[in-house]
Length: 170
Image 1 (cartoon, rainbow, N blue to C red):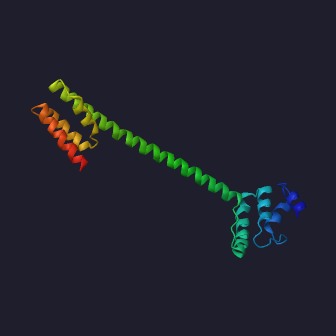
Image 2 (spheres, rainbow, N blue to C red):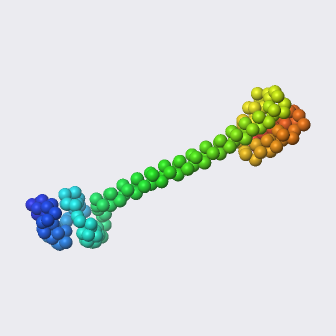
């Protein structure tokens, strides 16, 4: 049998096709797939014979209830893993971009509020800047932006910031 397998490795040899088309001379003991693994490693089947080989192998697997993983299945599994990794990277990039845009919009909103306060009231206490930097809700920042324009005094604006911070804590 080993001699037949080595001869069949020549792609032009008709014995190669006979070996795969008629596996009857090969006796495989139940649960022993070393021979199939060796043949799969030594011989590269033409694509048109892969399906026939799989059908024959399915019969053997059903009898033994043991699944043999062929080289083309291993390749398909590897391709699936690589595709999954690629999709994961793409999703991660999209999520990273979205998170970056969101964080950037928060930074811009905070900077706009501080710019308005600086224009209107000249001196902004550092504590107020720190409190505004703690706010991570865009709706609250939008409200503060409007109130930075409309507040009668810096103290009135500071009370609003305090109310918002207490609301975020709850």
